[in-house]
Length: 127
Image 1 (spheres, rainbow, N blue to C red):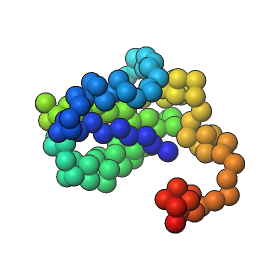
Image 2 (tube, rainbow, N blue to C red; image 1 turned 90 degrees about the horizontal axis):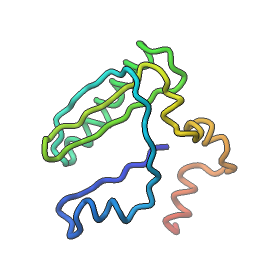
Image 3 (cartoon, rainbow, N blue to C red; image 1 turned 60 degrees about the horizontal axis):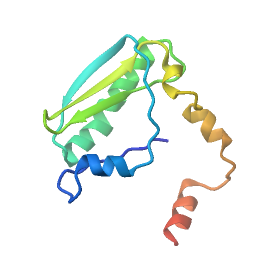
Image 4 (tube, rainbow, N blue to C red; image 1 turned 60 degrees about the vertical axis):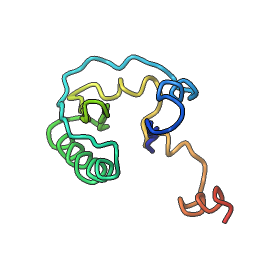
């Protein structure tokens, strides 16, 4: 499960104001050796499509082939001003990136539901 917050600079509130309205937990990520990749960022649909269907799958494949980690971590930051996204794939210590929280597979097992994703969406959308 992934959580993504998109900050759109064309809205009335500033990016900082919208960020401050969210209930975020702040932590310090560990310093580790990592593969670093940069990709042009347009803050639009094209960037999102290329990121999700090309960049992230290629980085995940690379991490599975090159690193002996149980869990693959891909961390990123994107700068509309610089029109660039930077992706980090840690070589070791991926378990430290969870900040004491369970990994996705463990968290998923803890959810007690027999509903399919479609059934959950239908309920949420009132269908």
